[in-house]
Amino acid sequence: MIRNIIFIFLSIIFLGCQEQSQNKIAIVIHGGAGTMQKENMTPELEQAYLLKLEEAVRVGYDILKDGGSSKEAVEKTIHIMENSPLFNAGHGAVLTSDGTAELDASFMDGETLNAGAVAGITNVKNPISAAIAVMEKSPYVLLSSKGAEEFASDIGLEIVPNSYFITERRQNQLKNIQDKNEVSFYDSYIKESKYGTVGCVALDINGNISAGTSTGGRSNKKWGRLGDVPVIGAGTYADNQCCGISATGWGEFFIRNVVSYDIAALVNYKKLNIKEASRIALNKVKDLGGDGGVIVLDKNGDVSMDFNTAGMYRAYINNEGELTVKIYND
Ligand code: ASP
Image (cartoon, rainbow, N blue to C red; front, side, top):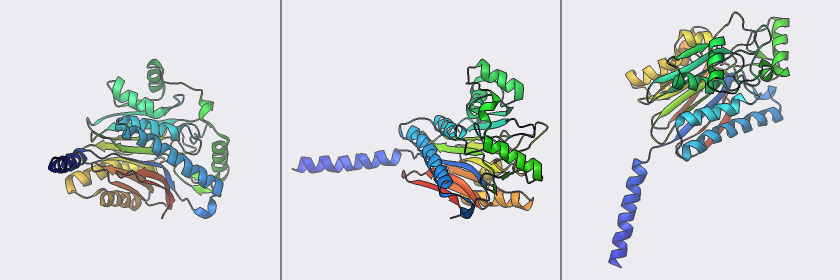
């Protein structure tokens, strides 16, 4: 009897210790910020966004739960959103003034501070994989246009014709902008101005944080315009010592404010929490006349999803395994 009691007692202590040493896992995603308003949304479209966000975040979470790396979780999660026509990334990306798709993506590894990015690519099916490959298989951080495409093809990434990315919705959006000279983020499909870039930040069981972002940039863009997404520190940043960040918004302002690095620096040097840091960084964007949003995940698995637009497609599964999926400012 006494032996049994001692055994149970020791088991409880052992399990308690194990629990404590067990690192937390968590994942957060965005599918773009903008002036999303419920009254402009059909219930079907709203449902489609919610389901796709849930599918994407669950794919990454399952990888983390099985002990997979945050890098793999970010890559596979972003694939789901790149392959969906709902977002401004991969298939369904916004179009240039010539009616073609030019895609940008970036990835950062918070353990090594290694990073990779591609800019202005037109034929790689999943740009986030090209960004990761630049980090892992080239001596560079950022490759652009033809050279990036040649690299991606040489290492065996899936190559598709540019028409794969082009959807009727985006052709209509472009026509609308060109006819009416509208703001270039206006999306006639959902009758709103919005940024549809996708991003993901994940924390794995080994305490490694990875962040990735993928986009078609701005509708009606020309002259090889690049936004914040391929610029490490602007659209994407990750550092295990503090947090990982992915941004969406008016890229020119996010570059000028170095938004993602700004958040990491506020956390690292000023010891702010990620919510305070995100607010300060977004307020600085607003002061210059820009808008958008950021997702941030810190080394403890805490999540922040802040924006200064009406809404942001977003979801996370926290370190308790709880799922949250949201669109509007609620
Ligand atoms: N930040 C992206 C860009 O300016 C746009 C977006 O977030 O949708 O290229």
